Amino acid sequence: MATANQVLSSTNENENYQRLSRLIIRAGTELFRALFDSIYPPRSLALANKLSDSTTRKKLRDILLNPQRDLVYPASGLFGESRDFDISLLSQLLKTLCPTQLPPLGSGWNNPPSRGDFSLTADIVRIKFYRNDIIHKFHRGELSDAEFCSLWDEIKIVLLRIASHISAETKIEWEEAIDRLRHDPLTPEAARNVEELQEMYQKDTDTKESLASGFARLERQIQISSEEGKERSDKMANEIKQLREVMKNRAGSSAAEGGGQFMEEIVLL
Image: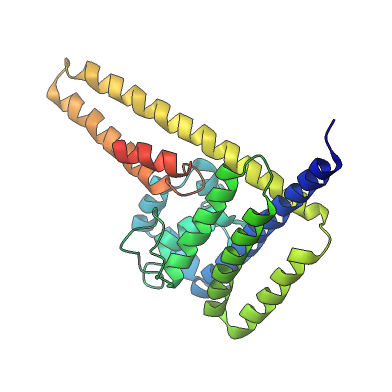
């Protein structure tokens, strides 16, 4: 039978996870969306013009999963709106569609930025990695008080820096909201945020396995194709190269960011 201390500790660790999940999912998503909307205002034609560009279509086709592509390019023939995009899709769109406003880091989008880099791009990448840590390192749904306090303070600082790029008023508004979230009673919405993170964890795991299976299949095919002529072999080699690029593009993103171990597996490829 669990002791009283164990029961209370477990409950507190669950609440810690729910609060941090809500912070990273709700605050991260809304701030990413506000940034995206500041570049591509919802009621303007800027986003539609960008998405209709053939080069943009090809880039997004290469990096987005089918459900994400359906949100950006719905069957209706119109274009998606940021209000329908989650944090993972917004991260990909900010990276791909906003290179002028968010110049890429020397370390790239799929590696943690240097500790001294406080640029907007670096902070967006940081939020992506915090999200991945919460999904993959704490997928059991529990955080100790020490883990919670450390991550909360780190994430809060990054979120407020992002908010300051929108406006001083936005930073003040979010600082007050974040402080309330830390102490106010939890709502049913917090539990839904946990479910959302757990769904992301399962989706990441499934996608990683799917990509690995696809890579192994292509490796076998190219081995067979070597007996059928160099032309077919070159075609298969090109398919493998494209799959590697997709895996690299998705590493650290919502579909194939399985944490540090998966990054090491990609490097070995």
